[in-house]
Length: 374
Image 1 (cartoon, rainbow, N blue to C red):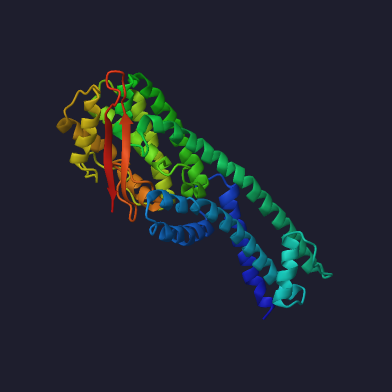
Image 2: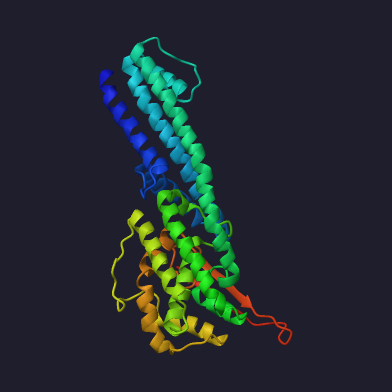
């Protein structure tokens, strides 16, 4: 019966090695089964369960912030545990040990402790293989962490910079309104160029390292997903209400943005139509669009179309990315924000908008929206 343990031992070691290679070495969009099970089926539901029972959003976000790091550490531990069990099954018959004796020798070799060894040739070969595996896997895991946080920092810099331009949580019409209020419409092409590059980096980093999807922004009302959605909505509004004045960069950021979302959606198996029609329905209502239109018109944003004429064009842009963005926002429990769908258990939040204070109107006017997510 001991010799039968060789087969599952070899299979377990091969499966763990393949998972490590797919996750840490091969530069290609892939989600290992270990990460899918540990992160998506164990860690995320657990933290979501406790977060939904918190009373305010800040507490909910603080609980959910542990999802990404916990998933990463548990995946690391799962790999080492799989190798430990696999090598234990190999040593059990080769060294004529009990199973616990095989675990002790495999652990000693895998962690390079040197507490147990064997005089048998084949068992010694397994010890050497376990020691090499342990060093290699730990080295890859150590190298993985700074790579992960480097991509996280690149992502969050742009999200943080967007707060002054889009509010917190971010909202597409607010980007256009704030730029108009401070006479910075001419800087929008540069903003769209930056976010086009940012979206390309997001597609590359977050599909190669899916754990990043569960890493939340340090601020409870900021989110990489809401930031991208707000920038894309602002570009879509600009193209819809002022097609002659809208810069070409608005089209480019939209195309790169929905391409990035589609690559992430494909990785997570989010269903979407790859070639929707401009007349297909969207979840955003024309009434909500009218609120955004009124927001930019109230500050003097130049428009070439009425709200009735602009709505079909905006819907034709948004249909390309809305379903994926809203489904990702639901799965990641993104902060509640206008035009971002509903998330179960998020509750009610008043999101303040910019206060425009001037010497003539020192008190200014605050525009706020009550956000409700059921």
